[in-house]
Image 1 (cartoon, rainbow, N blue to C red):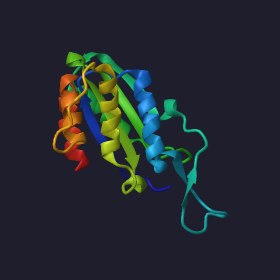
Image 2 (image 1 turned 30 degrees about the horizontal axis):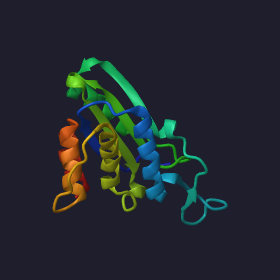
Image 3 (image 1 turned 90 degrees about the vertical axis):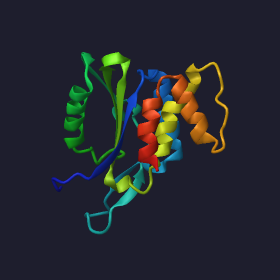
Image 4 (image 1 turned 135 degrees about the vertical axis):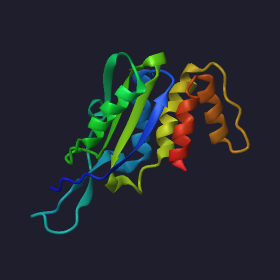
Length: 178
């Protein structure tokens, strides 16, 4: 295997730590909408020919969604140092080629969320679905419903995240999703 490990990702700064059960459930629902998140790359026979996508029976969400506890009141710079190490690590090709890391707590109760994908998934994973994972968690915690705006999902998601103290997340992710 080559030492080059192409990947792309979405890095979000969350206003708070998401609820673990709700977050994992939303990631599982996202996997249902994104088939490549449930597949791995396999080779045929003697390794001759092009690789192919193969379905994985049960995807172990505990493997793919990892929670890393930082030193109390860690700052953004130290969290980004941890992310630099994470991004340098190759992915296990025997599993679906994506990982999610939640790092916190940061100063002010914030959490970093990194979705990391192998380059082979670049045309098949929609970053907007990843933001929806976080918006769904915020919606469950919010007693009010957001009013859809002229562009429906984008405006209502933005309003919901603002109420939940997660607007910084939406601004970062919105730029990545366009």
